[in-house]
Amino acid sequence: YDKRLIDRPQIIALNKVDVTEAEETAADVAGRLAEAGHEVYRISAATRQGLTELKWAMWRRVEESRGPEEEPEVQDDGSPPLH
Picture 1: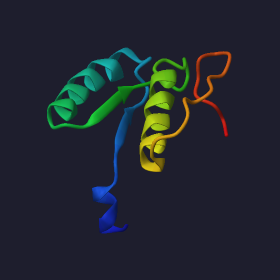
Picture 2: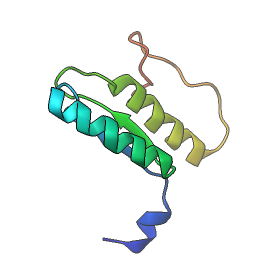
Picture 3: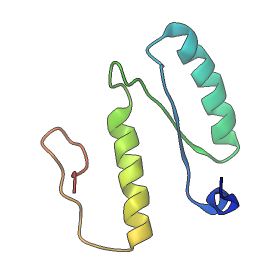
Picture 4: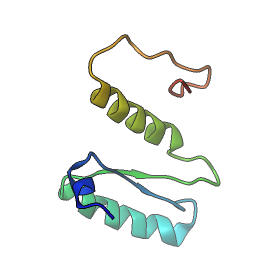
């Protein structure tokens, strides 16, 4: 663990929201984390729910760290490019 990690941009992904009980918990936790200023995504790896939004959020964070450049290409499914 490196204490400098706390200063890096963070995205929180809450997985398993395809399970009813987990979605209820995720909704509560996501609300609290968002109130604290965190960027939170509720996802399901099994059903792919929320993954496109999460991928775009990660893409934006990478692009922000690189500085201004050209508009990113978009894959046929609307996902960010896989460079």
